[in-house]
Image (tube, rainbow, N blue to C red; front, side):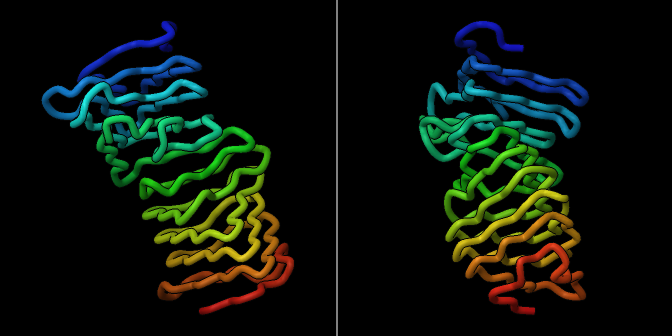
Length: 212
């Protein structure tokens, strides 16, 4: 746990099986040789209001494990997200990595393409623009609101959480085995993969636009 109000590091590794918790404190990263922050495949980094801040240009954050964000502004893309855009750090969300949103009222940011994306909040989180998920999207709890935005999903949609649309679009190339309530609004489901599992209308308010 980062206990100081601010903490600085260079070439910090969250090893497999380890957890680093920022809490409300910031971690400032300096540019050195190689990755400046690495999260192992079974490592976990958890933030609440604390941020990762690049002190200079060239900082590299390499995520192979899980990044839990409780920042209301989301994971990345602005000065107030979990990874601040100050000095434009390079963020590698590698294959097998997961970004987990676990606080009610968060914005799901689209500045960075995700590998796996999970929503474990018990309330409503809202997509804040076009979002790309190269792996799977898991709605474990709560509500994910697409609003009028587009989510492009290369993998599977799973979980029992609620999915709502106004005029948004979900492009899905994998299987839809989700079991939560779907409020389709005037949104669109595009199933654009091969030999996919298409969810029935059980638990769905009714599809508005459905393309297979």
